[in-house]
Amino acid sequence: MAPTQRHRWFALPDSRSRRRTAGLVHFALDTARDDFERRHPGVRFGPVVAVVAAYEEEENIGAVLKSMPTLLGDLEVSTLVVVDGGGDDTAQVAIDAGVYTCVLPVNLGQGAALRLGYELASAHGARYVVTLDGDGQNDPAEMASMLEPLLDDTADFVIASRRMGTDGTTDRFRRAGVRIYASLLNAIIKQQLTDSSNGYRAFRVEVLEDIAPHLIQDQYQTAEVVITASGRGWRITQRPTEWHPRESGISKKGGNLIFGLAYARVILTTWARVTLGNRQRR
Ligand SMILES: Nc1nc2c(ncn2[C@@H]2O[C@H](COP(=O)(O)OP(=O)(O)OP(=O)(O)O)[C@@H](O)[C@H]2O)c(=O)[nH]1
Ligand SMILES: [Mg+2]
Image 1 (tube, protein in one colour):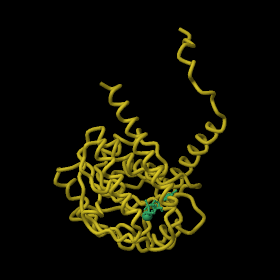
Image 2 (cartoon, rainbow, N blue to C red):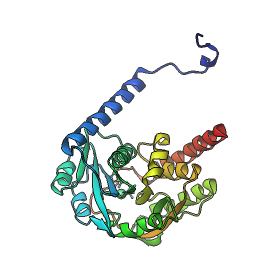
Image 3 (cartoon, rainbow, N blue to C red):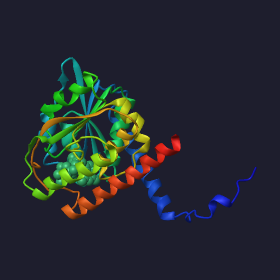
């Protein structure tokens, strides 16, 4: 039977620029997947995969990769750097460090780069995935502590907390933002997280496989991941860690006001999406 026109009253006209952008994003992702397969044919990762999304971090990422563990207990750790486009030598630094490297031809944003990392980790044998920044703010030596709740089976998803540990930031607005957004997020998802915007996280791979189809944020992705995982019933816990000042360069997330507004928008829109999705499923 031909589809009725009734439900098309409120549909927006199809936009060529939206189609073009979607097509280019697909093209960039496919190019990066091909690049990865060519660089690492038939790879099988260790059970722990550390995923680092890096955009123009040539000055910082070498030190991060040097301190990456290769074994935690009897679990082998593989490091995967997803180079998020950019015009510097981040990719070469990662390749020279001997880690798995996947290079996006253009900058798609941290959220998109991480989603590609989750996909590759899951496809090539990861059981646990740890994400951390390439700018030196997270300490790879704390990875064992991050994984502990997963290995003890007391949680499915672990978030680092600079508030329970040490916060080396000198920016008091950022420090206040961490508290304000954690409170807002806790109020809506009924958790007691102290640092929900921390990018240092450890997951069972099943959590990522479950939430990945629901993730759309390209930049301010930490809140989206927490709200989605919580809404889908995964157990979340936190671990004290140390937050170091950026090794060099500046945050690419914009000034504090822009960062703050964009982050609040992500919290509210993701919450609306997850709540609506859950209602429709019931
Ligand atoms: N900002 C930004 N970061 C990206 C992007 N793609 C990958 N990243 C990486 O994501 C990590 C976090 O980015 P930062 O700009 O340091 O943002 P942040 O750590 O959340 O915030 P700061 O506290 O300001 O450093 C770094 O390792 C970046 O290299 C991108 O498009 N934009
Ligand atoms: Mg940073």
